[in-house]
Length: 80
Image (cartoon, rainbow, N blue to C red; front, side, top):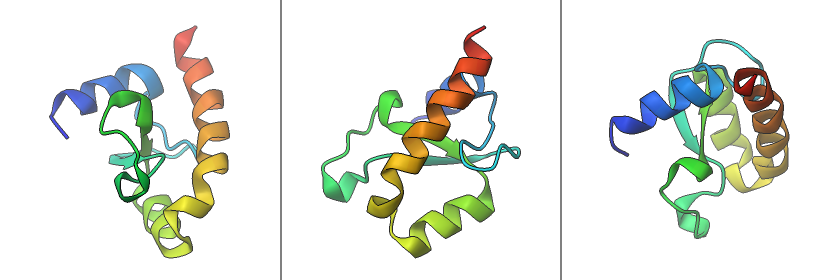
């Protein structure tokens, strides 16, 4: 991931974790690259350190729906 992704996450999500709404500084692929997920901004969201660890412990593939729902909610706040 290039450093431009951090600017995108700041602009689009205010660096807000899409799962718990805390400050976030961990870019995370919604659909894991290992499952064919793209390495582009549409597939990357910010997570806080705790949620990022939790997602990987639970299995990132199991969290896709929760992450997408949270991303929609957070993105809607920063679009206005």
